[in-house]
Length: 344
Ligand code: HEC
Ligand SMILES: [Cu+2]
Image 1: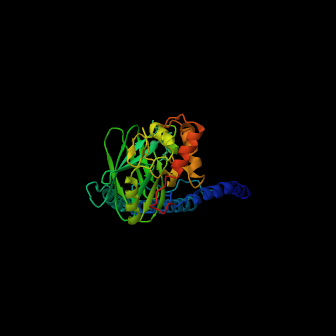
Image 2 (image 1 turned 180 degrees about the vertical axis):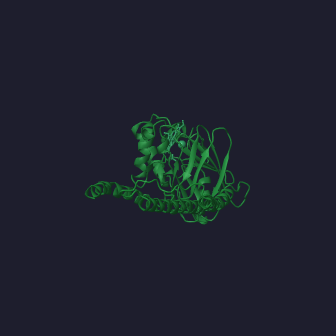
Image 3 (image 1 turned 90 degrees about the vertical axis):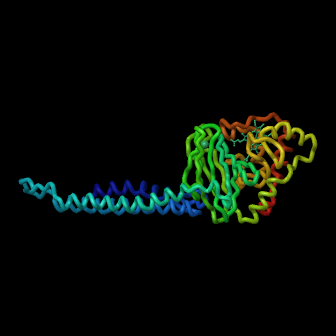
């Protein structure tokens, strides 16, 4: 008896640690266990149903096992072999029928949701259409109905269905916003995956690449920002407004020459990198340098100075700039803010 208590005592810290670990699975903007939209809620319902059923089965099986172990244990002095039972029709029917019933309970809602989640809204005029393209190591969002291409931050209205078509330009990635919907792959073979979701609560949700895609896979973060319809419309107008370039003409020329070959601001520039319009009030620089952890200007400087240091293997080269140019461009971008969310 004493020994057993010692064993339990030794296990206690491990159990406490596990409980602590599990209790930390709780960020509302990042957790499957705190769904923030209808798709995630239904997926969570399926999880609860299957885990609930498994728990009941495990508990019953272990209770029966414990009962059998105690009730039919070998007693002192017992020498004869107990009565052998086999081919009991009653038992066989019970242990065939019960699992079938359990499977049916699991299958019906699962199949129902599989079809529901696979509905195609790509032709729906009322849905916001977004073409998602994954790159090592960033996400591009193209809104064909609105004529906007952006990156790293998917801005959406809370009132509409968002219909996604997903592709990659390089390797396999997986698009995942745990609190809004499950993972969906972006396939290299050119076959486009589709899905839809809704985010009825305004807020910022964290997204992840969920498929090991290279050295900076773990840094391939993005955000989904859900805003009300008025703010969304304002955002669209601001994204389409003419480019605002640095005031100093020399700095503007440097920026155009060295940055706009890949990046866009307003109506100017290229698409090899994320659109920089409004980068001054985005949630993060390059997805990972969070602007609520360091000032955006500092994050911009850190990134532009040496992208490779922030995200090994990044496709943004280290651009040669004088310290004044680096300061000037970082300041200019930090002040490139949009007003749709009250300049926040
Ligand atoms: C050869 C193309 C190329 C050039 C030139 C280039 N960039 Fe980039 N830039 C990229 C790519 C690609 C990314 C995405 C990198 C990632 O996140 O993995 C990026 C990301 C960024 C980001 C983060 C964007 C976001 O939405 O978080 C900023 C800011 C940025 N670049 C600024 C600049 C500036 C300033 C210059 C000029 C000094 C510049 N870039 C030149 C390709 C380029
Ligand atoms: Cu990836």
